[in-house]
Image 1 (cartoon, rainbow, N blue to C red):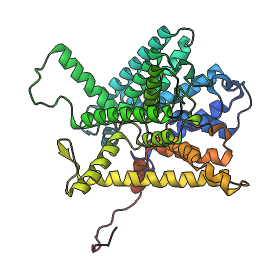
Image 2: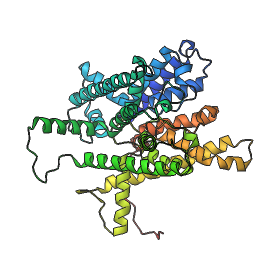
Image 3: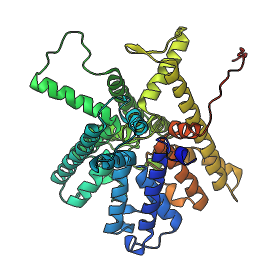
Amino acid sequence: MRTKLLSPYWLPVWFFAGAILIGTLLLYLDANHPGGPLTVIDALFTATSAMCVTGLAVVDTGTYFSFMGQNVILILIQFGGLGIMTFTTLIFYLLGKQVSLNDRLAVGQSLLHDPSFSLARFLIRVVIGTLLLETIGAVTLWLLDPIGFSPYSAIFHSISAFCNAGFSLYPDSLSQWRGNVGINIVFMVLITLGGLGFYVLNECASLFKRVMLRREPVRRGAHLLSWHTSIVLKTSLLLVVVGAVVIFVAEGLVNNMPVSLGERVLTSLFQSVTCRTAGFNTVDIGSMTNVSLAFMMVLMLIGGSPGSCAGGIKTTTFRALCGFVASQFRGRDQVQIGRFALSQDALNKVISLVTMTILLVTVGTMVLTSLESTGVSYLMGREKIMVNMFEVISAFGTVGLSTGLTPELNGSEKSMIIVLMFVGRLGPVWLLSALHSWQTGRRYLVPTADLPLG
């Protein structure tokens, strides 16, 4: 039993839970919230939201928490963004400890999908690269607006943006910079880099280095990037562009956007980028049209890419699902994506992940609606279904966007959102694998048969 509890699949669960518990205890201290009393459930909610880099907040971060409390939230965001497992494994290496083969394989599959990589060199590169990008982002924000972004505020928002957390020290998030092109670009770049995945960033940096130094001539017809990286980049770009177009059209029809065409384009683009698990906003989410909210929920469910700071089912899963649907329409046995076809094992994981995600979102929406409808007529409860679904998907996808429902949640509703954030950050497939590690495999097969479908 002890061996199973300390298996590579369960270690991230315990580390995340432990960090959240410590964060809850620290945030609950009176010195960390001079803005008013903070209940245990609110402290737990905030710690979970920070550690799971979600961004949903029951109180205003900038005014309710002290400088010390904000630092606790910032540390949780940084640890949650990089992944507690990455930090602990790096510490083991720095202390001269030996990491078991199982741990090495688990981290490799989580971050690089390659169990043969050099763990120590990669982890050091991840930490240094992350800190470098966050530093550049903070300096840029401070230089662009030294009044709006003090040095500490610039650091806080840069880390929050790169880790796709969405926590802001301002009550209206980034609405006051809605028309500031420079500030919007900095945030979009940080959010995008944090959501691409460490493997993709590492490969792009290596390619850029080779091209700049011209160490290797580019051969005609050669693939400059790996299959995984090319899928991530193409899918991410497509989702951002399509999302921006849909939001631009949907909000423009009812004049929810600014009058200036340039500002409307910038706002649409920013919201398309940020709802891919970042959580910042430059417009009031609660006033957006149902079409925009519905499409944003789709983007929030997809999220970022594997091995990144983002949540959701990931861009690769979405691309694989699209490939599966396309292959069914074409009558092909293989699911081809680009120059390769998916293995049956990978396809099974895609179907399992999408099915579990739909199930969790559906159940979560029904539970939240039921809890909110207590003592209220069913007609009023029916009107809240879309708002509740938006909140549930935002929590599961670790996005942090809200139509304004979060501060109004009661204790039981907050508890459910906490569970969704935790499951969403670890990933349902990871938790399913952890549960499977407890099971003993069957040594036999049962007869197969066809079942009428459709």
